[in-house]
Image 1 (cartoon, rainbow, N blue to C red):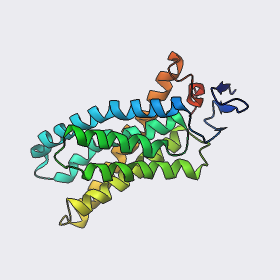
Image 2: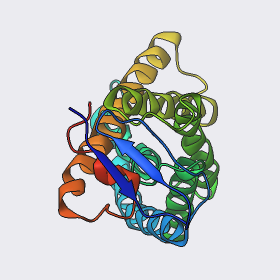
Image 3: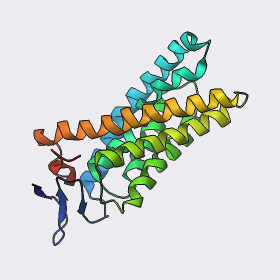
Image 4: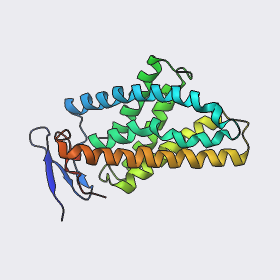
Length: 215
């Protein structure tokens, strides 16, 4: 059985989401969409900044086989997928991931402004996955693919910028681990966060408020 929730919207428009994770809605952003996307981005920018420090601190533990550190990657890719799953408007993944990366750069990072470029592309990857569904499906499988797509882009950027001398074997291992980490942490993690928040009423202004049992 599916449930239907009518979210807030402009006069004369209806936002509809079913428990199957499908729905139709206006693509126009409201003030609440912008504000919440910004809040998500800024909140996660602090997490990303802290994760930068943890990545650097744990690096020596992986000196023998550096690609293994890829299992930690997914947290950096969470804002984009989460932003889209909550807001469900075109551009949500790019906006949240990009702003989170930009603010974390302002807080200070060992990679400098490169993280801003990363944020843009890492937000664009999941954005394209949701765009393929015409922004109508926000289920767990779609979230998984969106997270994995962000991981693939991140691994490719890392290979180009930081690990150009790695062997094919090391590169393949890194791509697999980063993509798997992104799928689980950014994909499944974001989906679980939405399901946990929905019953609290925190998502009531959004179509995602109806996602309580969807897979």
